[in-house]
Image (cartoon, rainbow over all chains, first blue to last red; front, side, top):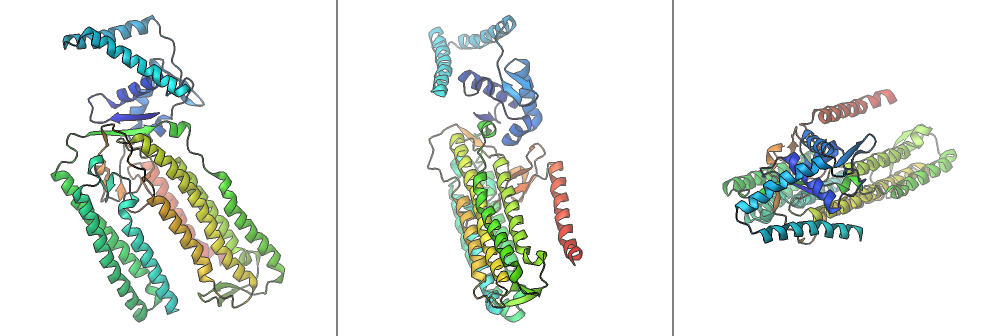
Length: 130
Length: 362
């Protein structure tokens, strides 16, 4: 999976890395059981501090998107969503939707965008398996 | 003797001049004379002007140095052959540095990075599914070394004692040594050692981090995979050619005759073919036709990590080696203390061995 980090963005690099990996898992470009490069390797490939990569991996592990395997390092394996996750995710979605409504984006447009994004993940998953 | 010196001088100068001429093609696409430029400035008029200037000045200086070198050889002898080569390298770097300064100035004046989103890109598949080193190809040089060893064993009983071990360019023996396993198989050991070293470099090339261009990631990952695979095979073929060239020397030694006819072309020919092949592989890198990728990201402006366009210092980069900007190859990250200490230590060990070896072997 190709991961690009925008260094001019306001979003911290570790957060961007974490987001891209979660998106990769959703799109199926990082299938279940796939091992991620070691923090040192990935940091060397990006040419960034390895603590940054470590922080992103830590976050992914805490949030249950990857497991740490003693032999193979970080392995993709998202845990099923539980109540706490759904509650937290709903709160964040609420903020995101509020932003759209506050800016006057129409409800239909918001829903259409949500559907398009979800379909996008599905499509890529189809591409991967074919 | 002088004729050989003149030929070697002219061949070396031409080879070096050609390599220097290729300077703009040897670096990554968005590195122009050691300056990182955004994707849309790769063919900027300033860059084109500096490339023309660099090449014109290089040709003029090359002709002058070649002529001066000839004069030097005729007046002071062949021992001075390295002097013009050294002068050529210095001029090469000075011209490069001049172009580097000019492009840096234009970049700052016109603010080339204004409004550009700078990024870094990596491909996890290069780690999870890395390009495979072509181990099977290693059979080629190993076969040549094995054939050399077998030939040596067959010839051993018939060899005179002392036997010729060194020849001049015309193929006349000019040094003899007592017959022993050491003297008969010196070149075979050299062949095996070279094969080992070049094979190891090939493996290291496969392990090195890829410099993925954020403005066209998929194309640059594709190019990296292809380049690494070709360079790996290239190093093995180069080792095979070197071994073949050395086999000519083996054969001359093992004929036991004081006159073996043409030797230098047989030894140097394969080496030159090998160097030409490696140069072609390097120059053809990044020759992907315009890819249809518009990520909106530019490679990050990392000039501040480069001192004079030659030394790389970035304590935040865990890489030990990065691709060089001047010439071709890799350079150590002097900001990484472990890498620096290891490389300095290895250099000291190799130098010490080189100095002590003649004393030990005496």
